[in-house]
Image (cartoon, rainbow, N blue to C red):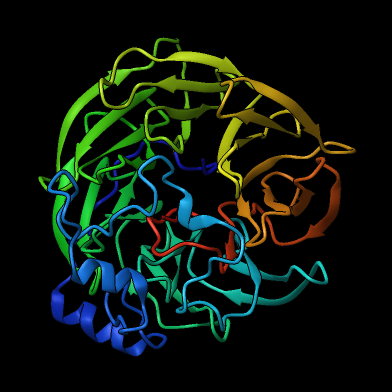
Length: 398
């Protein structure tokens, strides 16, 4: 959540024309399109070009590697040929500084600081893995970064991009337009608006997709709602208010078996546990004060929950459904958003209110490094990571 990003009315600047989007994209980094520019060596593109035989799946969606584990393609070493040549880096959007700090994880040092648009919120890997999109929320633009070179390209005009996701078939980008109260489906190649869906809630921000890709669940942080959305139909299927006054839902993550959904809640100090298919009333599991970000371990056994309000990380077992241990940052901190290293050994998190980044050993929770960055670090991306394609946010891979 952005410190300033409360519900507000903003004058729209109109929809982006397709020709302008194409021109801007061409002027950006090579292969800047979120879903285009696929090469024959791209396994995600190959899978999408030959849709899965299972008619239950969203057409064009790559078939899961393992029907019992949605994260089976995210194991250590399972890097797509598309990203194998990319240097390992941690990209940190500094919301208050209008910059992105680039960290070399081998040395724990900032190697570059990129100037981007106003109030960058998240760094988002594109569906085809070729581009990192910086969400300049108040700058009304996306800045592309070429992960092969670390260079920023020419911004693409996109209104109110608080957060960004991609449909599992790679066809559409979904902009979480929080201030505009809308889910905006855009062409993943050009970022041209396809359909803007008004939402009956305030503060749309995070999401995750069903195992078949046909629907997804969205959290609304300012009104305490959850939405269930039809992916292909681009329409809202259901809405429910979380059963707690003042609920403030944040990150959303599905379990490896696809049966259970977890929704972090900053004011409930835990995660809501939900049957997403039935979309029934969830139950609350306490984790810690200010629960915010959710990240799956490389072996699909645990969910890391960042408790921003108390400077800790809870480790939840997918098998038992319980918090097994809590890692506390020495001297405190404000762990927020991030990701797991490609080998699974380090959890990287932004320190939202401390202008720093934390590197945490996943074997035991030891703090490996505390790295100073710009003001208000938020949705950092660890890149590259294993996976065939990206569903967006700071790196949700399948």
